[in-house]
Image (cartoon, helix red, strand yellow):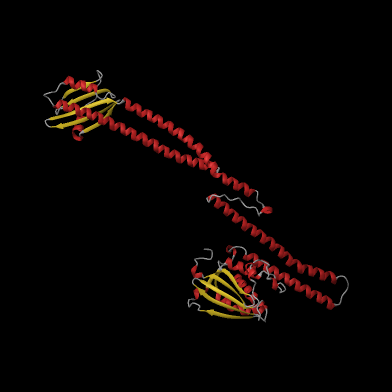
Length: 465
């Protein structure tokens, strides 16, 4: 069912429910008011008759009957009967000859017990009233047909039913129109989004002036489009840079083999070509492995092997791992105020990826250090483990700090140094994947400090929480 129809239906059902309660309440209270009114009028007639009967010295039966016939003109077919303490009928008035009401000892007894007893017999409404003023004790039974009251009640019922029907029709139509106006921005947003494709991702939805939910939705969609555009641009640059990095050694291999095949050469020449080709192949293998690690770190933690990883042990292994890559690099370690509780040195994560991230940053620090030296500091900070990696070198220009974690990005001054420009980007993604944070501070011609903050395992229920 379309949203517009659902809104109209819910709106109409709510209005139907409210109108039903209002109309039913009006009719119910009007009905109760009519009953109270007829009881009051019949009781007053009974009291008047009883008082006249109690004054025996001036009692005139014909006068009382004339009073009974002239009062309560809106009541039809009136009957008044008066009974003494022995249940003997001492007074009887009837509007219509032959008109009778059933009065038995049980009714008289109930009137004497409760003071007043109301009941209905046929079209007549009857009140048995006990007049107890010693020595005058009577049970006065008054009855009449409230034709006008019932007719008024029927008229009210017709008006309420008509109002209920017309009101619901008006509400249904109004709800349909209102829901259409309410959902008009959604239709506009759908139309605008349908016009956006990969070829025109720069297009954005127009935002209204009113600060309402539709404006917030439009802003959210525009923010999403901004992130999508950034992702597409990053993907294009990544593919372009990866293709360039792969094409360079392939072109070199192709050129060397082509030259080698142009004529016969000495074994030394072939060996030289094979050596150069081997280096290019190794470069491609290393680049491919880095790209695979990059893709793995770009996913989510759901497909990773997660375990408790002790960070200080990874730091302790760094000097040996870096020396395997280049003997001229030197690593200095310093642990600051580590907790006695070893459990606070664990994080949830993938050990291989965390090693890769820290190793890439340390290797980068050594590579661009003036003395091929880097320092690693490990400390705790509240519920986090903080790793600080520092070197002394040329530093990173301030305007380039925001771009150093982009794939294939390399500082302008360092483009002559061999590398892919993927190490820092890979480290950044791995740290983010582990719910951590990484930031960099650099002073040109002095030092550069990378700070990694990882949540300690004891502060998390699980890695995915």
